[in-house]
Length: 474
Image (cartoon, rainbow, N blue to C red):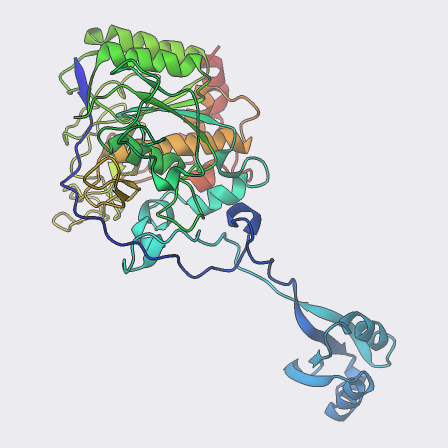
């Protein structure tokens, strides 16, 4: 039996990229700053001292005299007994010390600067002139129906930035991970680490991409971030293992895919992404090599993520339908199930996959007939040596890597300990997902939209199901 991915629409010519967006203020600058970035913003307003006066010293004339005594000018009045004094740069400390000894002064303090409690967008420029910039282009990361990439990055920054140290195997059409003959490495993989590559289609150690699909999938997982080029990857610090199991048309047989799974496990993968599917008519009994390999992966502590399929049927395709694979359906930028996405009993999660809304009469998020947004990552634009951000990529193939990257971020975050089991990671992803449709798990959205910010947050309570999940892994 051969598996295939949902092919993208025809790719247009490469849009020109603009150089970079304006650099935003730097909360979590160590997370997103490139070498040589500007210094951090000051913690206090330069040359400002906030003075509070006792009730007996509320007269403006007295306050003016106090300011004159320290060589300061009076600034804005917050209330009758508070003033901001402006002094020469470098004299704030001495001025505060003198004011605190002055009769009628209740307190004197510097003026601290607050900032929004969120990381800024990276400086990756996206597509020049795209309405809304990077945030709108990568709605799947940053939009209201995205996976909350910024909070996730903040949560792992102090421990493993961008899931650094987690090895992810991408079983696909290959990846544009290196120069080889006429093939070129994707420019936005310049900062991405690749290990243990192998091509099971041609039986060589060089699984370069002949299609573009695998490069796009790998880009969602670990494309370089904050490098002033292209777009961003969700687990940008992770290490990628390219494993080619699909040919240049996007087809691969069960025995080849099974070899790829076992190879990934033996070479240290913590997470495996399979953005591929068999026909929904294929049963588990017809792919024994794959089901055996998936059991092997689970027994060795590897999280496996698979796409639910693109037939728009109420049935999950294999291998995602296997119990030890996290099955992922696709949602649109409206937060609705995509019209092509398979759903049904056993669906675990959904993630952004782009495309148009399904016709779900009782779901207020769904608007059938409106053309939905695509998923953008850097990949080929017409040849294996030209790269850009083509439109037309949507599918459960695009949804699965969001869950794969989030699983890697969860592992890196340490919220489940040093070596969580596949069952623990799956449970964490499900219990922190954003519910869609009816309350509770359902056949259309599973446990809901994967939420990388919540899943990696130490302040989010550990789900009670982890105990049962941990027992199931023993």
